[in-house]
Image (tube, rainbow, N blue to C red):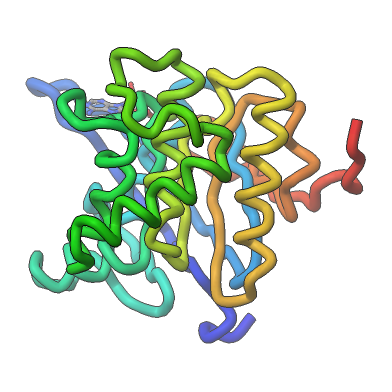
Length: 237
Ligand SMILES: Nc1ncnc2c1ncn2[C@@H]1O[C@H](COP(=O)(O)OP(=O)(O)O)[C@@H](O)[C@H]1O
Ligand SMILES: [Mg+2]
């Protein structure tokens, strides 16, 4: 595949954590390519390196070895200001623990990426409300995170990752707190994003109910990608 048609290209990624003298190798030489317009799911047992891999891809964590290019840019060698700017424009991240700011309402949380990108507050909140409606939270825009259920907080986190129309969306278990129907709604919304050939999605999941939204599924084990396969044909039940 030519580099122009790739959203993400990882080569021989290695990452070791060193906690007080104890070393844990989380990534042991990962090669993975994600095409523009592709929805890639990452699956594998707990501790196999999924969160570490998407953190490197999103520029949240630096690898020890190997290269990771996102839209043909090398985040590791960018200065911190350029990297912040690149991430703010191009990447939406849904954390496993949602990471909402507790003192801000749903609409204010979702506005953050737009405000970082220079949009005026009023306009940003208007846009945030639209995306909150799309994830089924139109009536909860003024609610604080503590007033929302886990599933509702998760949808606020997803709205925040989508609001600035980033070219790459990275999600860690985005349907873990959602019932079947809401999970389906959220995945349809994410899938729609991946239909745009300038965009791509990487989704870590254990949720077999959503596997058929993937274009390809990469299976990880013990710091390696052990298999990449096409998803099963899409069905609606
Ligand atoms: N911040 C950290 N410090 C030390 N070890 C870590 C840290 N984050 C992850 N690990 C270890 O790295 C390995 C991969 O973790 P992770 O990427 O979170 O896996 P997964 O998301 O697949 O459950 C695990 O053995 C985990 O314990
Ligand atoms: Mg994880």
